[in-house]
Length: 152
Image (cartoon, rainbow, N blue to C red; front, side, top):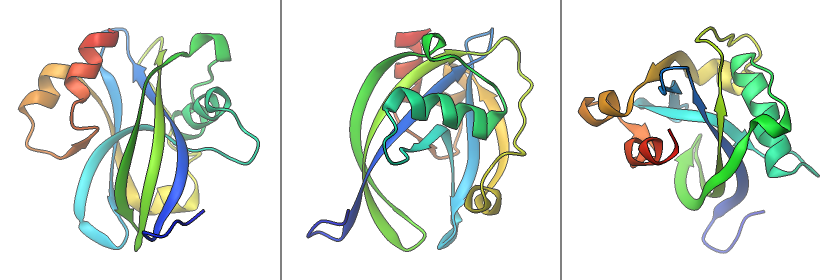
């Protein structure tokens, strides 16, 4: 739905996917309309029609990493907030809820990314809170180091 400000309203489930060392998996990508605007972001995405936040978190984790989680392996939501951002020529107003899932290892599979994701995601990396605090790379959410410390 688009409201008067021209924003597309969207609900999303995000996953703080943690490895055994407490590092979070981040995907590196860019806005197709502004390819010079690169950033790191957590696993997750928009809800499909009729889907709950928890169902979306489980689905997105599998699609973006190849890792299967049961609903009872997702903790949360540990936070819900609303952000506005441009993507591919549109402005989004996204209410997003963050879940925590713990991976048994660090191997992931990006082969299930959809066409849009394949065109604008080029890397996945496990990040510690300390590494996020010292990087000059852009990442979202910007307070992720604090959020990680709260959930690890």
